[in-house]
Image (cartoon, rainbow, N blue to C red; front, top):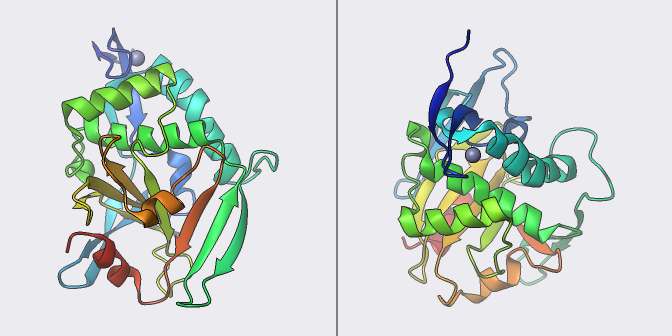
Length: 260
Ligand SMILES: [Zn+2]
């Protein structure tokens, strides 16, 4: 018989059998498996002070068997949010009706390239991404050791996820930048999530998952956000801007918007 651990589920707060829950859903790493070993991913750590990045092999299967019951993992987080993200953005066999429609642009002044995507289900996508941040915060797994939202924000986000409360646009805004156009696209890499302080004094976290960098702002809703944030974050209208970082500018860009 399988030994199942009983414990308090961190989402529904009930005493339940807990299951093996992934921190970052497996489908997000679909392009990240190396050829020779299906279970090894590469992790990159970047050092903003020295401009160096060093990839290293990590075991995947970052899961935690102490945080979620099966109902919360499968039904609440899985069916409500993850299924949408998977069907609209990841893997094969996307459903074109719900897939984002993206157009590419280039700023004639500085040559910056970006995509504006529409047809995004704001509530589902935002809660999906926040669920990753939240899981990373409640787990004790080493890879996520820098992610700690604190009791107040953990509880606010838990409630949003559990009750399906859709956050405002400026509540925990998320920016996405991509490395798809750079020579080193950082494809097949997962970065150890980093705690950062943005220029406006707001704290946040950066997750690098397969060429896309997700930048979370952990703010109170009244904290004023800079214009580049309000312009590009995911909107209730279903629109979102993804900046494509130009070649060689990856670290410069990070430094410019971070408190470095
Ligand atoms: Zn539960």
